[in-house]
Image 1 (spheres, rainbow, N blue to C red):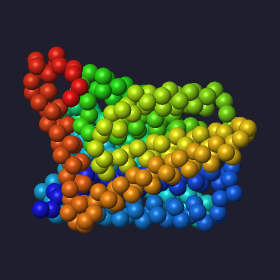
Image 2: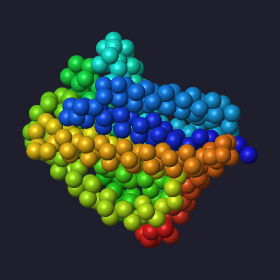
Image 3: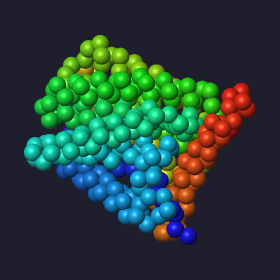
Image 4: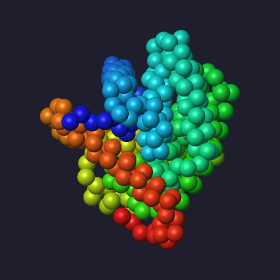
Length: 347
């Protein structure tokens, strides 16, 4: 039986691959890596992005829940922001080889990011979204979109626009992080397939810091704030480590990849800029560690989806089932506030 839809969580795959490509691109400033490596990695990112976007669109015409309904889905919807976000990351790399093409890609992706963020928050402002539907992916439309657009604008030479997007990303970080923290503290735990989205909480200071470096390649108070915040967020993840280790592996584990890669990239740029003693060794350790993580998740994903198509459908269904479980639980909470309002236990 064919799956009804491809969960948008799968867009984390090209996002994670973009993260590892970024790591080795930044590592080139400290290590004598082969010049062909970053372009090859970015080509893989572009191909995986195109393949998944086409797959989502095609499946959207064939199933009972079409793509437009997924965009309105309270759990899945925010993750769609990754489509233009990954395009911007590819555009940043393309600027080095073809400034015109790179800027066109960035400009179109930036416009799409703004349109989607505006539409998404317009829906949020109308109310009715169950609080249990909120997860780490809610940081994507504003924080990932804003900070990566800021970085892309700075690389393109659009400094004023870069500062504007940085402000939008920061506003989204403050508001969405507050909402997410309240949901995690006061409501039952996220379903297993959504647990990895909690790693996204380390991404804002890392991606924001990279955007700041693109705007002003010096280390000042703002970068020190980002660095300390990232360290605290990484330490907070240690409390979640036992839960991650108990979680059954799904394609949702790709949510780990980009945040970890962004943290590694930020660390590499920081130690290289500050010329920290042994920065080459630190760069090599960080790049090797994140590459190992992505390879492990990629290999386990291949094992999960084989044989095709039965494995693919089973892997998709796990994500879809937990998405819908979170939504049903939140809807039940809205319909029965007298009982849910006094229950704060973890499931």
